[in-house]
Amino acid sequence: MLSAIRARTITHRRPARLLLCRRLSPRPPAGQRVLRQTYDANRIAIDHVLKMAATRNSLDEGDAGGFIRERTYGLIGLGVTSTQVTFGFASLIAHGTTRPMRHAAEGGGSVVAATQRLAAATNALPRGIGASGGPGGKRSDRSPSGQDEASAPYDGMATC
Image (cartoon, rainbow, N blue to C red; front, side, top):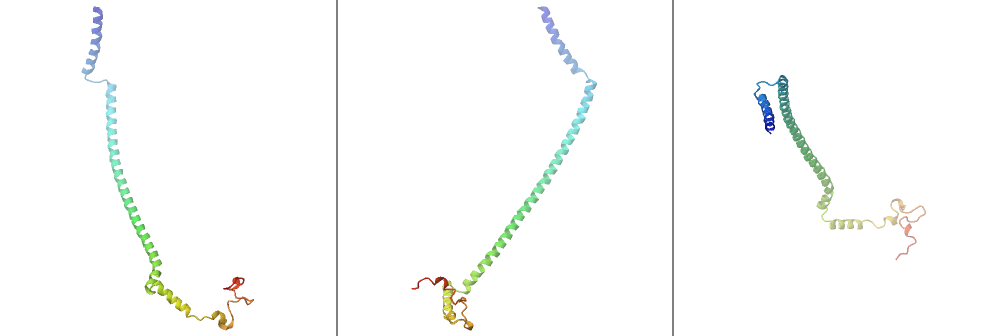
């Protein structure tokens, strides 16, 4: 049993000594020094590239923000201008459409008065233009057969 305890303490002491030796050694092996120097150089270069990328990214974002702002203002201006042009054309069309109606309403008085004037003017026309044959004694509403064209479709109908 004593030998088992000794073997145990010996094996336990041995790794501890190795760890102490590694910690107390003043210089790492030559291969590790070269790797450490290369790693540090690469790390410095990577940090420099990251700083450059961050600077470029912030510049690009600023440029994109300015571009978006310019386009937004341009499109808003285009929308306002097109709306004004549309309303301008609509007012011209409305003015052109309502002007004759407004003129008739202002100059002619009421519709009833205009209708009465038209009826009076119609009644004042001579009654026998068609019967008298019109100018030159020829009836213009008769066909070559001598029948009245206006009454031709009604020949077979009874009159009251």
